Length: 154
Image 1: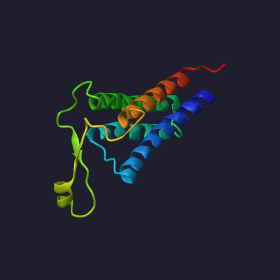
Image 2: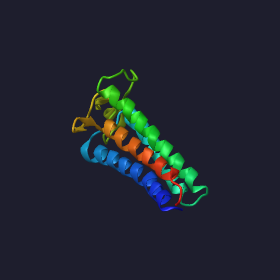
Image 3: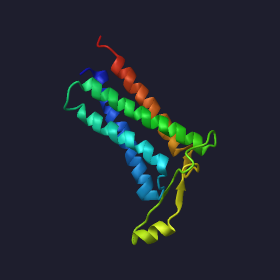
Image 4: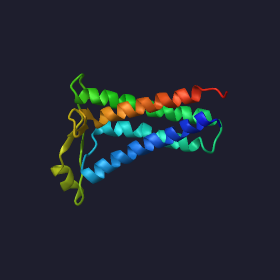
């Protein structure tokens, strides 16, 4: 593998792994429970991690890395859509929300749990929501992966 392909492979694994870790730290460490659209953003990252790991053992490596890049881009696009819903730029899925479950009796947890709405920003940094940051980081990372894979050896 060329140095550019190795870097693309590391990005294809590292970016979704770090974003997923951040999502779980914010969920379990800071009680920022995910809404339904937040979960939709996680699924492509899980796939990207698996595809990037597959690229370490199976040929053709470039294909698996590229597919991981596509999965990262899909998560970013979902994040962009979600951010637009949060900022009121367009309407989201009207039934979008999830229940934040705690510990103890499951029925009591469901009955007393708050609904996590997809159209409300739970936390932001510099005016950008978590979904917005996922859009920015994932999209830039996916484009970088594609550019690195497109480089030919000198």
